Image 1 (cartoon, rainbow, N blue to C red):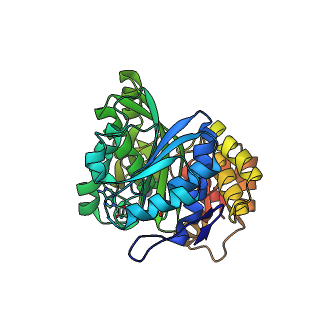
Image 2: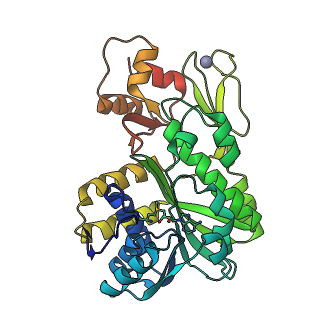
Image 3: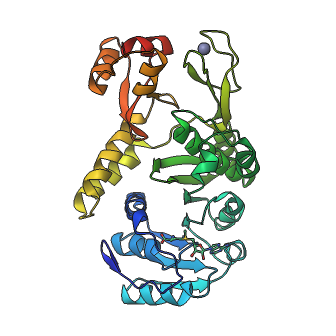
Length: 357
Ligand SMILES: C[S@@+](CC[C@H](N)C(=O)[O-])C[C@H]1O[C@@H](n2cnc3c(N)ncnc32)[C@H](O)[C@@H]1O
Ligand SMILES: [Zn+2]
């Protein structure tokens, strides 16, 4: 097998999904953008491809430890580490036990399905650290995004929302769970980059020890309310009645209402991307620039098609025309990485309804 700079072997039964190449590339850019020297633990390593790419593509990775519980994965990762001349090792074990034996500056959590049961153990890898980086992949998109309240309550203690911006609320529920777990360890979080792609959600966060940071993170939690009648959506500490029609709203939360990304970090990643020869370089560049544009805008978006349908409009205006109209009226409005037919804006709901007419 070959993925970007790495040639590696994947024995039968060991997991490898080539469709996650873009996720690994973006995550590797995040590792590089950290800049300072870090020890990486790839805690659900399978063939080891993720950690090996991080270490080969970034000079700041001092050492890699690949962990997997599945016996055949371990010799495979060991061999792949050796043939790629990466400084590191592969060990067999359950991440929950290994958390007491290894320290990490950067921890990669990429399990099958939900990362929720592993988050407490993830923070144990940071027991000796004042600060660290946590990179989490969630493939339980059907739980985080959609209308199934019971499974989302079980794993994340939050209610999801099944509507046009469900992927953003799902991502924010995932980040809330990370922030809550961090707080239990007296740590605060700063999301560096968080995104939705294909059938997974990804967040890379900077964690720092300290009561003030933990408290500040928890203050960023709240709810998103969504009115089925008029299409209103809004963010507040607790679910609210629709301010337009007074109706009860459907809601998601508690979830993270803070920023999904850090601007200077995204810019560092974008600069690194231009120097790499990734197969997905152009796509990554577009995604990063869309994500940077999302910073400072409300924690939800508008699907232009859905707004037109709601108002029974016969034709759907061009995205650029809607954005131009909003900007002309003095609002900020940007496209979003979540959907090619959606806009993030600070315009009030009624202005947004007008803008698509
Ligand atoms: C989705 S795969 C990881 C894919 C890999 N990160 C990549 O990018 O190719 C999940 C891996 O986690 C391993 N795993 C599952 N539960 C684990 C646990 N509790 N501790 C350590 N490894 C575990 C599985 O054996 C599997 O290899
Ligand atoms: Zn309403």
